[in-house]
Length: 266
Image (cartoon, rainbow, N blue to C red; front, side):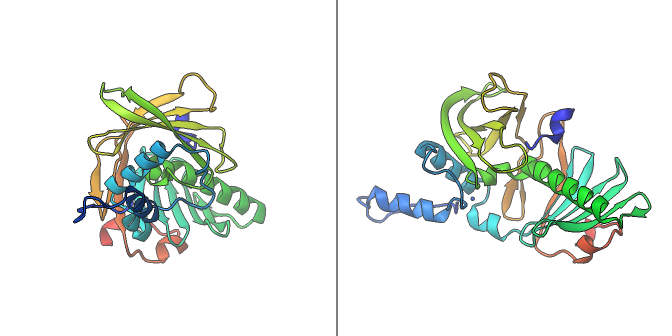
């Protein structure tokens, strides 16, 4: 399943207006302020309708404030490895039983510690190589979990494709995400399907190159559950993201020590 390794935010606005003649422009300004794009988002070349749908997705997922203030994410990536991500502190812990490796990575500084089996790496070149590998794993695996919050990220161009039918035969609004000078595979493209009944992402199609005629794969986004103030999905069809949890407090030792962690204690 080689595709597993490809790299592959809006307050819920309630316009209960007392004055129905309130200018539309003012409402639009409020919506934009509530979910500002990241610096470097290609707003000039993005479609206004695609941006509108991105903002609806953010609201349905729990809202921009909830996304910004949720600090720690934990999940198991398709049974291969578990990740504990400190979003605000820019740190990640990756435990990979598949190759008996634990990565403790400072994402902001590009530094960290790595243990493989019983060996803690001490050679600077080996540490750098494995820290970079951990960073790439985090980029890939986190996108599979939180992509809907990142529709207006730096380097992203959003296009409105129109309506299409999902794998399950439901009509959805389709957005295209292309990238420029961002991530480790900027040549990729995604088609993101949004359920107009829930405003939640219900499918994505992955294209290795933006000009490919057919996707490398198409997978559902199902099984949304509340985690803290956010709605998160782990059901990708046959593969599953499991053990999803969010926390506001996690011991620093989880990112500093190779000792096993037990999230039930948090």
